[in-house]
Image (cartoon, rainbow, N blue to C red; front, side, top):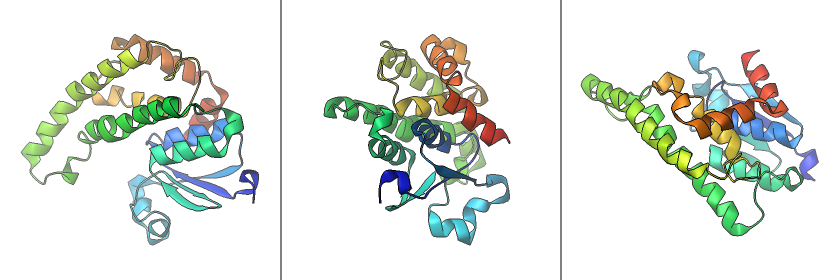
Length: 211
């Protein structure tokens, strides 16, 4: 079975980190079915979805080889399974640098963002949860101050080459407003976001998510 024949399904939730995988798949031109998971009604905890992804989170990608979860892993697979799309560097060191960026978004930036909404994952103490919420803005500001230094080669994360790191950054930078951070304070990140919004794949995904 070739990659063109793989029956792919992407399980996503609007605005969640799954948006990165959603955009990456759209960029490849591959056929896939986008299936919305409604967090407000608890669909992520339904027996049907837990049978697909026992973590009860998005994204989850079902393809010919099986099921893949975690944004960084899905992005890497999408890029490597569709090399003709040119969504990742071919040089091993550059690929690792891209993965380093994606890992930072997953392990540090996303976690800082989550402290504002899901403090109950870490503590049952209301005062402690409020303390975590108070730190979201400063922590996200610190993260994007660092990210700004990585965008000096622009227009994309890896410089001239558009890669799967770009939809991931676009997704995470979209959370800044709700975190109380003004993206205008980060001109390179702001310019990156504007460049992303001009891409047909991004426009298609945003339209699908808002439908």
